Length: 252
Image (cartoon, rainbow, N blue to C red; front, side, top):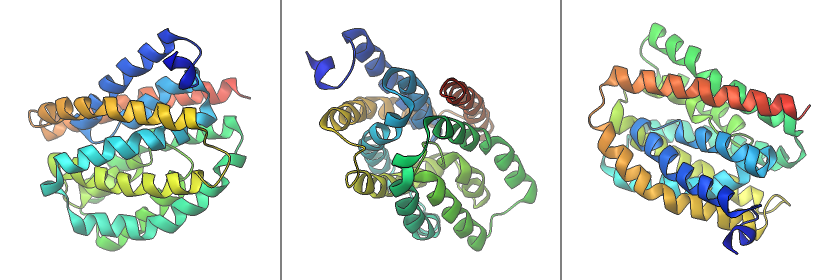
């Protein structure tokens, strides 16, 4: 049975994951964020908190590559370089130590990372334009968090917005950043004991199912106003954070 090959307990679990993959990727395609941690919040009770980041890493390699390709003409390469150059070494370091982190810590870390995006965005709006040096510094923070959690894209969101990115440009640039992030994280994880074939297959399946969701979300994105886009992102941030706080509490 395919659910056994993917390391799942039953067929119903597989069906829930497949539906969730399409739905959350549609959200991600429309907002540029939120889909990754929403899918993580769905997966965590089904496969375990610690398994989420490795599986989601494979999933997002597929998902973000398709999203970046769909919007490649809209990528802001200056913002991309300002974030990814300082982020890369920190991603490698934090990913290497991920396997040793307690499950409760991972749950609370992901909740804090996601929830912090709301005040960060509002602060970013208050302080106005993001300078290149500020965006680069936040790239380092993003990298440190990215090796051990899903959702740090929310941390740099206010700074990308402050740098002048909106809607299609924001979605495309963040997708390109996330694609490189997940390549780095996957490379480190494969050198540890975090992966087996079932986790890789499950991540690949979810990633493939995210492609039609990305396409659907992209069509929705074009109809959203900038204000509506930001409100939706914040609402999903709260939901995802609360889920991880709950899972972290259960693991204590």
